[in-house]
Length: 308
Image (cartoon, rainbow, N blue to C red):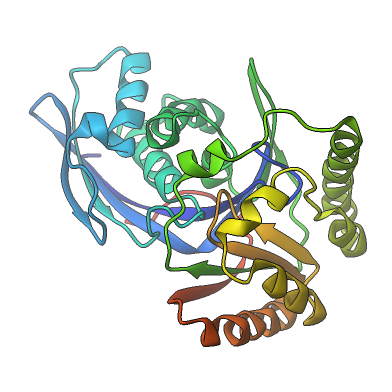
């Protein structure tokens, strides 16, 4: 195989209470990437459509992630060309850098005959995240590659597991067209938390996982509470508290900040509720004078997939 085209999904990281450990994959939006074998050694980003990002491989998350893969494969001399179609806006909070990193390593793995497992690919994609924000976190790249909900039990050693996705769970995401850099959003976080807040947070994480496995939508709803990160980051997002309150009144189970923001996600039981939530998001943001996009999506259980 000399050429392959892949779809790389957007993702929601943190999922309210699961800062840096829980993520989910979306059906939309997502990037597309074409990857080709080349007779010329090295990694080249030939074009990026839809975003102004570095073409130099060492400064591009896709190039860095593929380089990590080729080093482990012990063939850093292999020639790879990458063409990227960005449909996920950088700085959106729905896994733009993760989609590029994940799509690149999954695509190259296919070109090489799949020498690595999906969980091994997560580690390579994390190097792209390290370049993007200074931290090799996995809560975006893991669901992008594995699909569905994922849980990072540990980073040292890396231990990632897939979680069950309830059949009727839908997600609605609003992306205000402002940029919040992950590195900046991390800088404002407190480095210490109260024991009472920590106890409440890990209770919510455990209950969220239980709710997913039990198809208990009410338990999922009660668990979508973040008492550590959201109170600090909410100031970065226009009308956040009003948006969250009205979406729950419209039928959302709950939600919060997607990744480091500015996108906000809401989970709902069923497509009808998810679309009501989308209409509510529109009613809140329309008067604000801020451009935005809204996505209604099922949970993507496949992750990055080959489309051509």
